[in-house]
Length: 248
Image 1 (cartoon, rainbow, N blue to C red):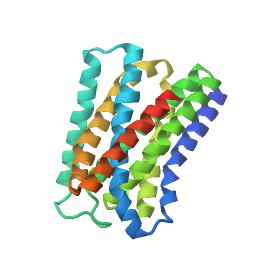
Image 2: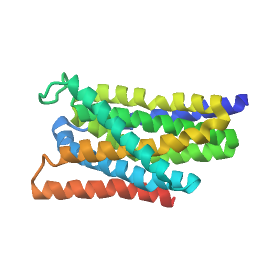
Image 3: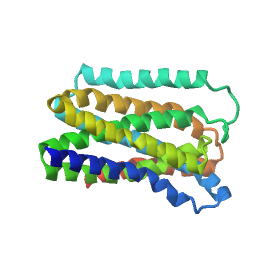
């Protein structure tokens, strides 16, 4: 059992460090980075939709079947996201986003990412409870899954008004929820399956809400045909990467 704890905690810490992938953009000049930010947001929207409809929902439906409860859990995720965003809006006046004033959709992205990382931690912990090889395989799958999403998330935070340093910091703090999820998973053991039955569709609901209600409207602020086409291609690319990961 001690080995399971060591393997699990090391694995989720490695997964959390993936959040620093955004450091790759630090060498890009500010004016060039500004031009590609909307495409990173587009990619993130596609990745969120892809994760919800290609990974999360099919996975939980395969495990427990598609019943009314799954639909309700998805809608709870959407409704909860709506309430959280309302709270964020109440605490933010309607002025342009900047380093001093963070746009609400960036805060929502952090919330959604936190839920997702928490579930990743639970799944990794549950996998190690089966056996070490299954845990390692699951960790690798999560790492491949996190890389494209974290790049998109970093772009969303920058576009929402975070500085590069703050975006890296908060992305990492949010990623650490995976550690909490793993600890919860190992502590409650046999009850993990029941929790993931709720949390997986709940996470899918939050992803659908964030991508559809926050990120897509942000993209509609750009109306130039060429840039709009590139946005659509970026969305498709985000979905395609999630599909490719599934095929792997």
